Image: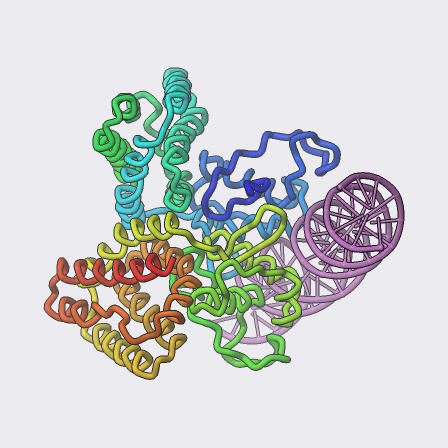
Length: 240
Length: 240
DNA sequence: GCTCAGAGGATATGATCAAATCCCGCGCTG
DNA sequence: CAGCGCGGGATTTGATCATATCCTCTGAGC
């Protein structure tokens, strides 16, 4: 019943593609077997999520075809999918770009996140196992390390992993799928904020969150989550 | 700046395709000019939304190619987009189907709707103009008419139009895009419920909502909206 | 300032390849 | 002898590509 989990629609976990070298198609690779459009999708998704794309940047199909060495059809499908998720934007005149968010958009994302993520934290609190909490502590450690090193990309990766892990524990695929879509939307902006402000004074309600998880304090977890996301959105908003 | 609004990503208004006859391509039609993948997308979207698809039903690319007379690529892209929105589901073994919702999914959709739609009603209340309210009253009249006639499809169309109109008035494209995605998910289930229970005792908090809009009572509008969506989800839940 | 040609890029097609399912007949077992 | 499981080919269906067509924007020339 659990199928091969390729392509989970809007929900589900989407592990990043594991940086396969380049020339090879889907030939004899071991862990591969993924369709090309899925590979392209995950690559682009990671770029959006971890700020490899500038907000407002134009994205062309043929550019990606040349760069990724994929065919045109897989690239088109991956782009279509990302546009449907709001990660990319159709400009109307056949042009695709990374969305450039304004205050109004950030505010809507804040509303949506505040509505959904604390609820996920609440549910995760009731269901997460000790191993899950341990995993989150490990991720949080790597996150702190990235902050110490001032490594923005690693920080973004670990931060996302932390939240994704929590959301997965909530066992509410539809809700966590919605939240993933939200993250895709503010990913590029988050990156430029971190680039501008550095990683020094990044918010970290993660410690509170972990404590709440350990004590089974669902409301505490929800509060910590809300604090965390409000700080994050606040930072983006201040950076205009 | 407002482009041509083709393909609004996850957000934006998506008017249904106007039932063009059949044989013609995009030849000399006047109002057309839409790309084929967009036409296919809107057709399928309407089918999902208004219950022309059975929950659990399998959907094949080549079947749609044959049925819609479109090429393979446009169909593939439309399906990819609908899967990203959660309107369709990837079965893992290269098979696509209309999602079959269980109680857990309905419950998550209820949570998400409760979190977003009352907020949209609140915003709409502050911004909607008298013409907008009049339009919603007209739609509600058509809706009542459809109920009287026992015409399920028309009821679904008008009901969706009513909510879409309200959401558009909120001027929060990201939030209303999210809500649209939610509607796509429970569309097929809603249809079977209406088919089973008939249109006689359908919930209608619309009158309260319109009164609240007229008096500028944002909280009243939010309450009416919450009541409306809870009744709807409750009905689906009872039908399992 | 306007028109038109050219270039770049997006869209659409059909062919081709690969994979998964289905179906049927064979042989084995009770 | 009848029923059942299994292997393998046929068929359906999805994935990818190369190519052709069309659209949009840009800039030169009038």
